[in-house]
Length: 306
Image (cartoon, rainbow, N blue to C red; front, side, top):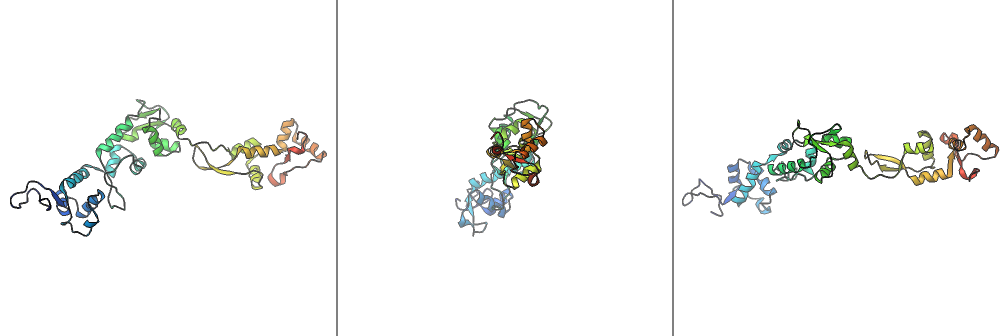
């Protein structure tokens, strides 16, 4: 009986009341699972080997106890859609939970295995319990939004918010009692934005550079094109998009060497026409002319204060 797929209801030298071995075919009939699907399930669970590949469904013999335990677990498990609904999670949030290891699946689904993933109800409930234990406010206040909204407005990933939440690093977490599951969680946008902000790149945005030099964007770009200022690309720490910046050292070097006619006049407290006429009379010519960049710049070392 240990090597034949007989079970209760069969008769072999007397009635059989215990099954010790299942074939793919007998398990398929017992649990109502198509033999092809069943082969995939037992292979995914590591119960078959390469030696079984060429055998017919009747000749693939496996321990009944292991097959029963596996198929009962699969039978009681929730599908991908059912698990998402159980957690009350939006599709994007559930993709993060299921694909990034927050919720383990009992079967490795995907194209390689040809199976859909299934999830234990117990694992889903444990995750819900763990998350709701991090709620700190009985009700939300103005400015608190769902996890989907906070990731969008704080320009961060679902996984970042989940990790902060599970680690207990978010101080303000509330629940919308009119919504079920994970979508009911509410977060403070400003807090999450601050917690997920990337390290500052340390550079000046082009707008800041314009303000510091007291010039417009067209003049700045001409200075860049002519090689007087070097720009780099860095990631904006807030919106996480590529951003053109100028390093403070680059800006300091330019300002040490050059000064615009406008800024020179402001430093001296005189009208720029007066300053320009004075410099012309003394034979001091611009280092960067207006026709080239849209503004006039002089070398500081050629002025009185060099």
